[in-house]
Image 1: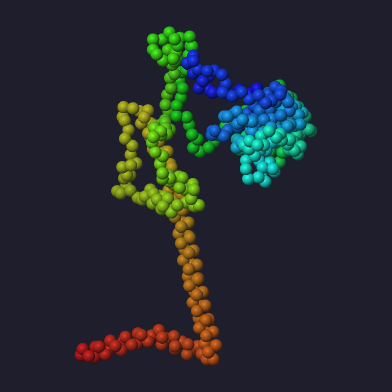
Image 2: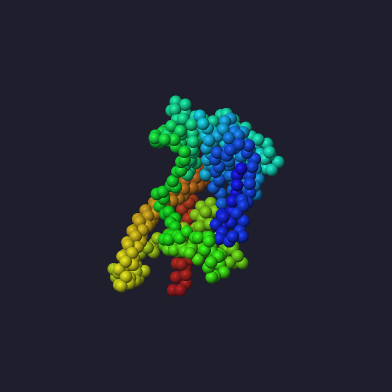
Length: 404
């Protein structure tokens, strides 16, 4: 059986709270060897259980519904789920592994989600033998545990021989043996990835936790059901990330700058203009050789620790400003190069248009039967260009004579 429990009911101090499971899933006909839950935080989360009856069942544990049943060739020993809940992987006693894809060839030909189709939930699915792979030459032994990398490309298996093997899921091939332990590897867990530039840190740190005593809850003088001996000391290390304080508060109707940039096909023009203006203001020289007032941080003379922290923060900000100034110089140099290229191409295009216009005039002259006399053309062009100037000069002379 698979029991689904509610943590608030289990951890409640009230003696009247029910400790019974929310759902009991009992479709397997053999002992359950392993179970794994999905990674989604919504109400559409799933769980996969494997059993000694050579079956694997996908559950919607929120409502206790069985979604799909897979008939396996042997009794599975371990299971793990894809990070995006697209497939799950099972291990067998002979050391082989198998991929069970929710979106297989049958699913790709349909427009509906077969995994959540209630009409097809009672139909068992038998996976293809091609989805099973192994490395017989390595003598790994029976597979007892599985773990998947955070990007879903590498599968790590622990075996009864003590070996820990890595597999390439894209090619279903054995990669290497990561370790050879002195005993069977019954459990595996990959750590979360580290090394990102701006990791999200916890905003609190628990200092002291005292285990509550259930029998002292009724002896306290207060009306609360929380035991009197229960204490929790916590230290906040940063600003709390709080959401809406009231359910009646209206959600914002306008998108933030980040959402606009995320859904826009390119960076919005307003965001680019603001960024360039900010970069230009950072590179502006200070007046009289002194830094602006925003560069100075008020420090408390009595608190040397806060002063040292503020100085460290100022150094870090100056380092960031210097890096942004370098980026600004490179960006402006690229803009100037692009502007020069644009002017060059525009001049070339103008010259080409002038040559095309001249050729068109020559062609019109030949079609009218006139001889291609370059002197006549020059005269005509000069007459057409300079005639207004000569008329204006004669008019000005006549006007001058009239005034005399």
